[in-house]
Length: 514
Image (cartoon, rainbow, N blue to C red; front, side):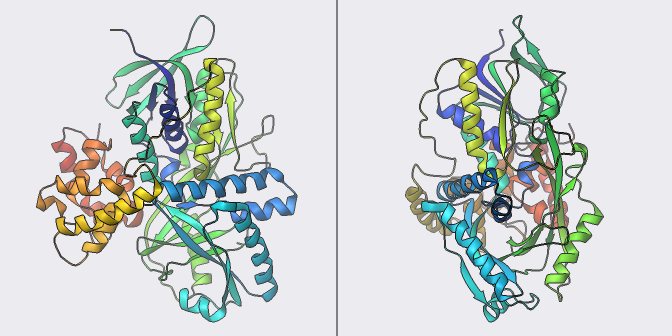
């Protein structure tokens, strides 16, 4: 039987790759989407969970008169509004306080954040405001004494599930989706142009994927695919490890996050509400690609030091930590130690036809995808069709329809779930993960599988089985780190549930060790 031929093969199912596949399917292309690991299992599930324009990039833009940084902030603010509107069950508005010790500092931040609000234009989600000393003490009890703060709005979201639902929606639209499937070879035709890729599954099975265009969306792994296509391709990627810790203590009980305006090494730091706990991040350490997901004790100590500086009475009990490698794009022709690195993205097309989307940030994955499809269009030699509506799985066709549907579904879930303490929290969790599909998931499950398994995150057995059967989960970490965020919040609690997930995988005929 002949190998199938796709219009587009996308290598890498992180935020950018899943977005490319989703937007390509909407334009009528036949698409295959492959990932060497889990869907969104790399950098894309290890962010600070913020949809934001980047306050520090705005400050840098004005200090250096860098229009590229200003464009990046403007684009990201527009995209922040897009995701808050299109996926309200996965993303929500979050207010953050930027504290200062002086009235002059307060005025400086007020002007800067007023510009931040203005750049969002019609996508503005709330105006910045002044917080006096006493207001700050009430909303952030335990914070060290400050003159006051300026509060501003950004978005907080579930990065892993948005990534997953983009990929699953692309599959629903016709894309072939494979996880735990590594590309090991790229093949060229007699004309020297790429025509196919060879993949290898975890159990050693190889497949050939023929495609008219191949897109490399592998983030920090981009140079490896580029060299696979062309051994002379000069390296373009730098990896910066961003480490995070989660504290058992709820330092932000009123839901107001904290932005530490400047660390000793000149960066900013976030302390954010996170599943009833506190997320602290991030560090910024250049590292080899292989070490991108391994936070060090020194980085944890660095983050804890700032927690204790700003919350002197906190005991700061770490329940989880993780790291992700930011795919920083160095300017073409610059050395690998170049300091001229920004969070912009670039779409490159090699002479062999490989299209690589590199750099960027989570918030701007959609513009990255659209720019990539412009390069794909050039390779195909014909204009793409206009995009057709394809609502994200769990959402309705309109934002208003999603909001109304969630409210109605909430009442239906109350009737389906036992009237017990924590029911409201479970409903919020189910809708926050599955949107409008939460009712169908619970309705199809036996009563015993609807009972929450943990007080940290009210995950139930029905969700574990759903993740394995319908969401491409193939091992324990897929389920407990990305289909829900339990391992990202409390690693000991995730370890407690590990046997139950292993049993579910075994029952589905999946060997997690394979």
